[in-house]
Length: 267
Image 1 (tube, helix red, strand yellow):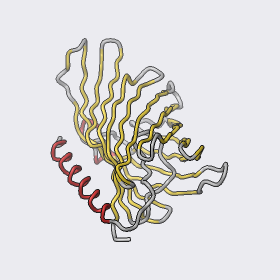
Image 2 (tube, helix red, strand yellow):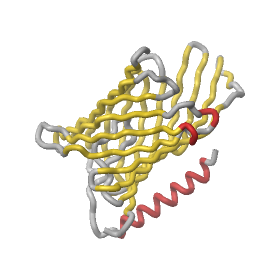
Image 3 (cartoon, helix red, strand yellow):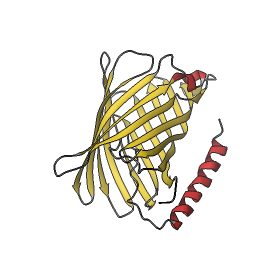
Image 4 (cartoon, one colour):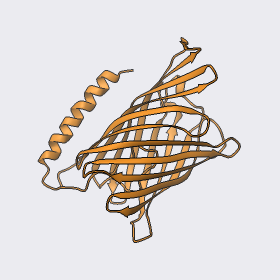
């Protein structure tokens, strides 16, 4: 685990990207991110731009006297605009897991990288009146890229349709529908999300969200989260989130991160 070196790199990248964009003559629309909520946007990154979305989060689960805690460091998603309507996606994160029994931490701490995520997103339709903006995305999770503690035997797959409606000048509604296969199980898990976003000021935004999954042969999981985003400029955004389960499961989720984009070439 090298969170210190990674944080130094991210800090340097952040200041470099801020400087680059302060010199940019062509002003773009504010970036649209796929974090901090679980709802993926239907929008793709502009062609020839690289967008970096990274952060860290903590979550805990408690059953009777057993509590598990997961710390995810530098959960990073790279998005590259290949075409006007197509982006490539690459994600990886480092996780450390701890287990407590009656408040005492066990020695069997797990740590390592989750499977590498490879994916694409394509824009299908632009918003037109009551008709929403629509996008389609899919991912593969490659087991051979994972550390021993988090290495599955089979390749994970997910896909989802992403929708977005503009409700007013300051509010929007986004939602996803899809399915996922993972955790070495042939069982499909149907995924849903719905998020309401509200602009508080030109730079500060808030959102609240419901999301979950419905496995074919297991109990459904339903969760919520809410958070804030702050746009430093049109190309750099900070975020913070808190959430928990509605059904039995996650006790708490706390997350914070940063997103920014940089051009491949001068435009």
